[in-house]
Image 1 (cartoon, rainbow, N blue to C red):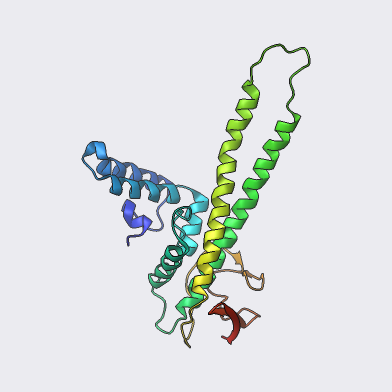
Image 2 (cartoon, rainbow, N blue to C red):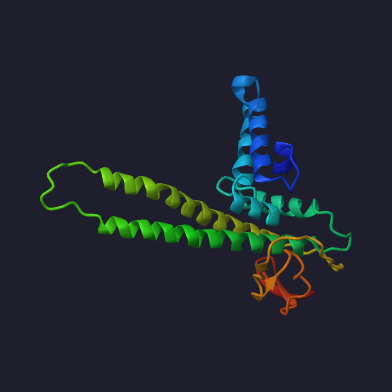
Length: 233
């Protein structure tokens, strides 16, 4: 399966301007009206929807989240996350399941942060709705301002629904990953992403995987057959 960057024909370090330019070029090449295939055009559009949005691109770069959690099953999400880890070129002794679990946990954490932001925006607009009143002497039946508020709120409400759905699907996918183990192996970390809080102990870490071995809670919980058991890293 091609990465979203490959779909647009660009490198991972592409600038927003390069992403937009590549999207326009690929959209023109694949548009059904120009002789292209609809499925190719839809993949290009989806790649731009993710890479053209800073938060969505950050999630994709850190945990392979391609923005399709609203239609992908937990099984597909778990497989996508594991394939994302497989493509990173980690040393042969790496615990790839641990890496995939950590990536999935970080993806959930990022969606949760976005969910808090959009819920706050919905609450702000709802407060305005409660305050908006027509003057007692107003005779016009128009609902111009009410409609304007409703239109403004539609976008944040959709964002809240998306992130709630994403978190639920990713948690189910995380359960699938936790059913597996990768055996003993050395874990060396070289990837770079912005600092995040470890979902296990809360410590701020510099890379997405450098905390797998260094976490103070060295006994990581794994789910096997529906029951939790401890495994020493």
